[in-house]
Length: 256
Image (cartoon, rainbow, N blue to C red; front, side):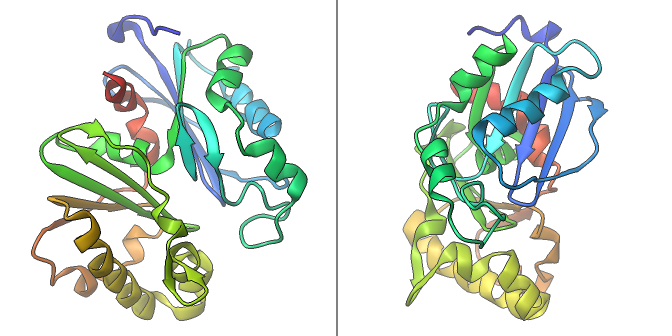
């Protein structure tokens, strides 16, 4: 579906996390017209239940012309290839519900939302929407979001690269990056020790990507100690968690 002229567009932007869902209506210039109250992510969460939540946002406020949704996990052409958290009936780190997994994996969220809302919709990985808000479009720019787990996105001269689920990589015996660096680990270790782990992770990932700029966002970005980020030779910028919603307008430019 083709969006109307940008000058007339209001965008509903939704950042769907493992613990919370944030949504705002933005003007074509990115001005916040409505900021919805923070919604704790409900569990169990099926695709249809999330669609109903998004539909609820549509019914409030000024005219909405299009919708941007950021989801955790691997999203390809608006379809869910792999998604964490939402396949767990009790939320992050609880047991996987096979019924939910069957509903989510392969689900075309973009098409389903377009059909339900009768609006243009773009569905991306949540870190990709974060990145859309802050990238300069020059060089290789990487985004890491630290929240329930690790999100990531890579842009080359402003073009979005194919999404890689870096968080699924095993970093220690029997431990994925997601588990090694996620929210439960931060709570257990405390911010100072966890920050050292963040520094170690960045050092290990840099030789694999060799970015020109690294942006760090997500709900836990502000909890990373300044000392943990001082020693890097490349530019590291902490971006506000609000970028997950603010990128909802610029995310449409990633499609060319």
